[in-house]
Each structure stands twice: as C-alpha cells, then as structure tokens.
Image 1 (cartoon, rainbow, N blue to C red):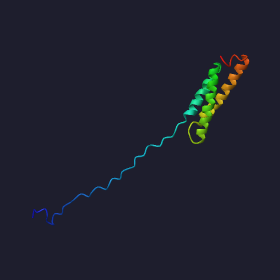
Image 2: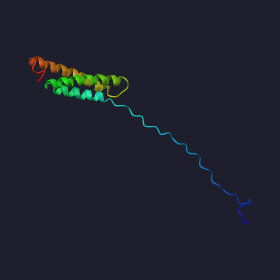
Image 3: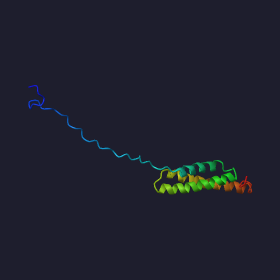
Length: 113
C-alpha cells in the first residue's frame, strides 16, 4: 500500500509558471534643448552691459541677434526656450542701439575702441 504509483495517492505536480513576456527596451524620449536661444540671451545681456567696449560689442550684438533669431525658429518648431530667444533678440537690438548711440556721441571713437 505504500506504493507511490498507486491510484490512492495522486501525485501533485506544481503548475508551470506562466511565460514571462519580455518588455521591449526603448530609449527614453528626451526633449531637445535650444542652446542657441540660451546663447542669444546671454550675449544679449552682455552686449547691453558692455555696450561701451567698441568693436567687441558689435561682435556680441551680431551674434546675439543671429543666435536668438535661429533659436526662435527652433522654438516655433517645438523646441523649448522661445521666451529666452525673444528676450535675447530684444536685448541684442537694445545693445545695437546703445552701441551706435555711443559711437555717434563720441564722434566715431566709440565704434572702434
């Protein structure tokens, strides 16, 4: 009667575990930055602060306006920091006005110092 194959003692087998479905590994979606908008903003601030530096200010003004305009274009296509690009563009234009006013009032000496 102690025979394990007898029908009186059924063998209990554990049920197999359900198959584990593997999850697909996709890289996390990250939003692209807008470095040109930030650079335009920084250059816009510095060209207003250092508007009396002569030709160096002219370079800053040109770069601030250029970077900010490109950054605004990127922001219109969904990139972040559109406000920073606009602020950089405005500050670049203000820096240009201050630069030319200093140049006019210094009789041209302010343009190329």
